[in-house]
Image 1 (tube, rainbow, N blue to C red):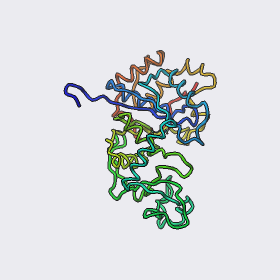
Image 2 (cartoon, helix red, strand yellow):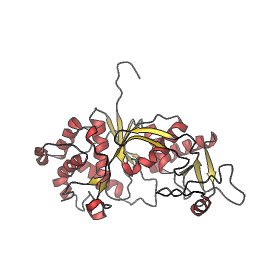
Image 3 (cartoon, rainbow, N blue to C red):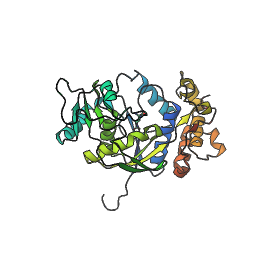
Image 4 (cartoon, rainbow, N blue to C red):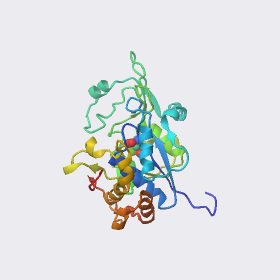
Length: 314
Ligand code: GLU
């Protein structure tokens, strides 16, 4: 760093356009925004539209419009992952060239059958490494995997505390280019965050299990590891998963959001453990965001999931 210059925090929000902005993603947008702005940092926006089968046409614009109505302003150009396959390809080729990644011909069913000790959970059984030393005869390459490595990955999460994962047990060698074509989220997110100079990742705790994989990729590609803050998840009534009806922030007309958006932001701050003054309930979105940037206390963010203060959507 040049002498006399202070490091700038670069945060980002990276929604997937698979539906309208929901309360969980609103909390991630707000959390990442204030954590960047409170130190005068930059806040970038990236549309994660690589998973084409799940992308819903028009949703990227819908999310952007909702963010704008809520008073969010981002820095620089919006990155769209669907236009960036060349940079992911470059990273993939480098990993292949360096022997850190390899083609895999296994189907999901074969992986499940071959797993000697299934590890229950989201990820399914750990990949048993059938193609690690070359694709067995009669099989063709379907996906590309990266070596999980034998060293446990350790990192400190600003909210969730110290973390330690042995990737070789938690899923094993993982996919960076999928059998159905697209680059995997894990690779794209790491390449994009590094090339954008992101220093701070604030997002929902549902992505906490992905972080060790991303740190593994950062190390293999020689990228720095940003600071991580995984925000508590929003639950529905009585701790249940949020239903679509309760969860959507974007309203059909957009008009109600213009009138009530500041209350949604206010409640999102309360959800994040903050104590905004009652008077802010009568102010604008811009005023709520400005208060948050000036007074946000990261240490007050709760670790445990909880319901969104009502009324979530009026
Ligand atoms: N696109 C991801 C999502 O909407 C977020 C990715 C990230 O923040 O790293 O869940």
